[in-house]
Structures are given as C-alpha cells and as structure tokens.
Amino acid sequence: GIQVEQSPPDLILQEGANSTLRCNFSDSVNNLQWFHQNPWGQLINLFYIPSGTKQNGRLSATTVATERYSLLYISSSQTTDSGVYFCAVDWWEYGNKLVFGAGTILRVKS
Amino acid sequence: EAGVAQSPRYKIIEKRQSVAFWCNPISGHATLYWYQQILGQGPKLLIQFQNNGVVDDSQLPKDRFSAERLKGVDSTLKIQPAKLEDSAVYLCASSLPPPEKLFFGSGTQLSVL
Image (cartoon, rainbow over all chains, first blue to last red; front, side):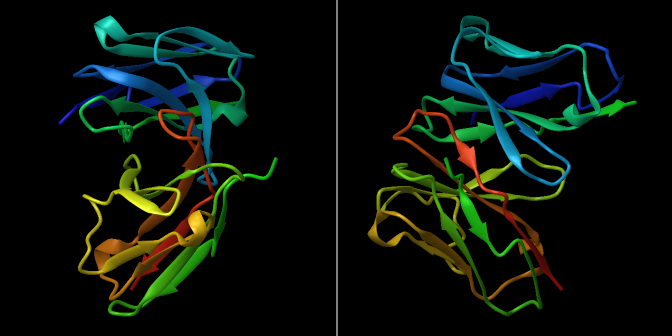
C-alpha cells in the first residue's frame, strides 16, 4: 500500500516562531488534505490541496504532486496552534478514500 | 452551518458488552465515513457509505462491528461484543461525493475495561 510519512514527529516552538511540516507519500495521489487535531480531539480540515499553493491566514500549504510531497507552513505561531497535524492522501489505487499519516505533534509555548 | 454531530462523547464499557455510536452528517453530504483512531496514530477508515449504500467496508472487523445508514442520512456504528483492543476514538466524517474536503465530528472516546 501507499506510505505516508510525516516529519518531524514532534516539534516544540516558542510563540511567534515559524515552522514547516512535511508530508511525503510513496505513490500518485488524487488529492491531499491537511488536518489539525486540537487538544480536545477535534479534527479540523485546514486545506484540500491536490497541487499548488494555498494560503489561509497564518497557514499556507504547498503540494508538489510530481515529487510526492506536501509542506504545511505555520507563521507567527500561537499557543492555539498546538495539537497534532495530519496529512491524508487520496491514493488513486484505494479509490476515493483517505490514508492518514502518523501526524506531527506541535507544542507552542508562550 | 451545522457540523457533523456525534454522540455519545464518551463511553466506558466492560469487555464482551455491546455499544453503539450515532452520527448525523452535514446536511447535503452524501458520503459518510467511520474512522477508528487509536491513541498516537492517525485515523483508520472502517467503513464508507455513499447515500445509504456501502462503498467500502474492507477494514471493518465484521465479526463484531456493524454499521448502517438508514435513509442516507444518520448512521450508527455498533460493536458487539467489545474487546479491550477496541478502546479508541471513533470518528464520523462526511463530505460531498469524493474526492472532496472531509469534515469530522468531535468523536466518541470508547474505553473497554
């Protein structure tokens, strides 16, 4: 099956710092989505980004499908950004179902 | 716009007991998913519905898990009998016909003692 690898597994930031999270995948995908799981367990969809770059406030994402990776940028981090960030890919061979990576745990300290 | 509704929020049962979870998707979302998330891991798909038909249940342990989606709206996921390894968060999600953006409910945290 497809492998979805996220790095780093764990990240600690001081409030105000910037960070880049990476998602590598081992096969062609139809689309890719980034999620934030807050400390209360709620999964929030951040981006639906099969290719190209999108921005939403302090967050932006870039997917380079031909090179099989995606990046999530967080600028001027805030304590509310803490949680787990997941990327999930719609693998063409799996048929419109998302396969999740293991996530990056982000802790932002004030 | 209302999000995906799930209940209960927490459930504690003993092994070999049965349990049921309920989900109401976002209005107009034909596709509904049940995911299992074990602590420290990403969500894993259990079953996917398109309207009231099953699209994929290849990862559903059918000897103990069952799910239905009556009238193509609400869905229930049942476990009978529960095992210790079923302790996890059960997440419901919905979307427009895929591939589309996925929206999750707040989940049901199940503890099997």
